Image (tube, rainbow, N blue to C red; front, top):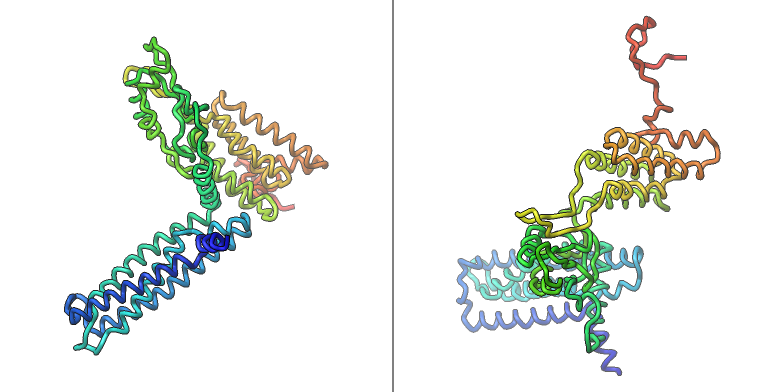
Length: 452
């Protein structure tokens, strides 16, 4: 049991891999220094390494830079740990401290520092002295590797600090543990893997890209119709239905034959599943981000309706662009006009609900938010065609009912439902009326307010 505890402590420690890397660096540089001495420092000419003075200056810079990089990596690791503890869960700390990439980065920087210092001690003389050429070249190679690793580490740290990165870190490790410690039960497989009409997802993730032309071509060759089960941007668990096979118009045999003619591995590769949603083909993802910002801004403890208004400005603009455009059809045909791929797409009502439902429910207590919502909805009603008016009318009706429930005074209700593109600042109740009467003789220009 003591040995088991010791091995567990080694596997979960932050210092073991860096220490091994430093020891490996010491052994390697001792070997190169021995090789340099054995050859009389002639294996690498000074035209490559420079004079002893040049080599000393370069290695001193390397050692200083590596000390700084090591401190930077340790600092960033501690910052990530603190953020994860405060914002997510203290239980995530163990996974972060045992992150192998961070440990290897620390170890590489430490090894480069040790190699530079030990090589620096071996340089003799000034312009006419000796330079351990192989060891100096080793220091240069490790320095280049450290710079590349630094760039990769910054990217890795940025990905890890996101909520998605931490969730995937825990999810992937737990999934691997389930696969290794709980093997699949013997016997016939149930679920989508056993259904010949279903092509399952090979791995978990969000659907980020679909090669529709490739799927149409594959369905045409198999004389079938493919149905994309998830919507673009949806998360799909591993093994869940990704595509469903339906018989084609000229196929008289059972659907199973069409499924057998399709290679599940080849077809599933035409649907790219990634760790998180991207903007590639997912228009609704942009609206989702803006709604998240808006809703979070008016929640406690932030209580920042101004930021919510800024997000509503862009939501209003995006819906205005969508209101007058035909939305993507969910049917894809081959060159003969036969439907070969079908998928669910977001409707106009879906875009409207995505943009306004959560903000309306969360921001009803803020007059700025309700006034801005009224302004956006009324403007959209002016540009939307008749068949797209119903979702906008529904939002106005629900907003009006929510405001009446939130405010007791009728004047407050009227103020909260006055359209205002700036929340409070450009509504009809806080600005002067515009007059187009050019025949006035009182010296007041049209649109100006009259004192008193």
